[in-house]
Image 1 (cartoon, one colour):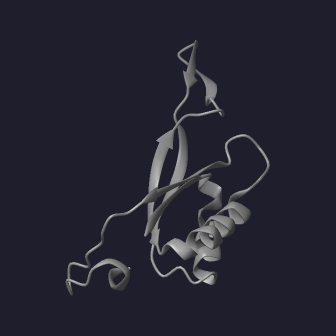
Image 2 (cartoon, one colour):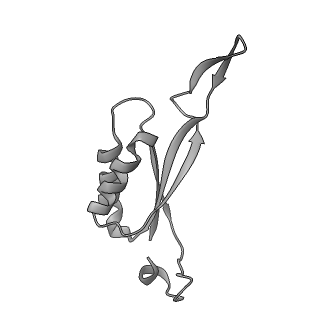
Length: 112
């Protein structure tokens, strides 16, 4: 099993979510997050003083899936989230050692 974490632009939330549902992804966790990277934020003025705001709002998708679904899901996210500009986001893939559904106590593949 793998965990896919995708950090994308907030305006791509609905596009990515709809594309994942259409691709058959049955569950995901979506969070509003802030971060910084190559985009480096922007400048604003507060009481006449220039302030660099380097924490950019993003949306994070967390998906746990079988190993054989990873490439398909990553491809769906990339195609739905891309604009071609700095700040499109990142996709991280990590191994998952185990999963348990609390209600039924099912484990691993049966739990996802």
